[in-house]
Image 1 (cartoon, helix red, strand yellow):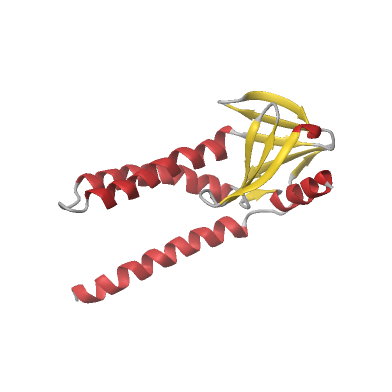
Image 2: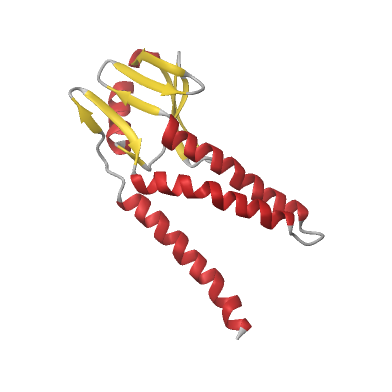
Length: 166
């Protein structure tokens, strides 16, 4: 019986993870929220829920790491470090960062950057991070702005940026 659970546990875990990713992607809209001329790029509710649930799950992972067997310390520490980084980065992006734009300006707000209004002419770079698996733009006066494909309005934003860069 224990052999069945050893085989079934990773399968169920993978299915749950796949379902979570499906729901996040399924409820991500290709267009941004529109307020007059101003477009708001934001994360969907499933992504925000995932980000919030990640915090207590990370606490559980840290506890599990503290119970790891001798010889597993490095692997366990690496896994826990990844979860800690994700449980800081994802909720920060989902709940504390605001990114809006129109044809002339970028309106960006975050706890680290404050509130900035910067013209699109300050766009200096468009790139992609393999580590974070997200596009980003670098804007003089703001810095790096992460543009995940899980943002509502991501496709519209990337098309807009392509046209701006010409």
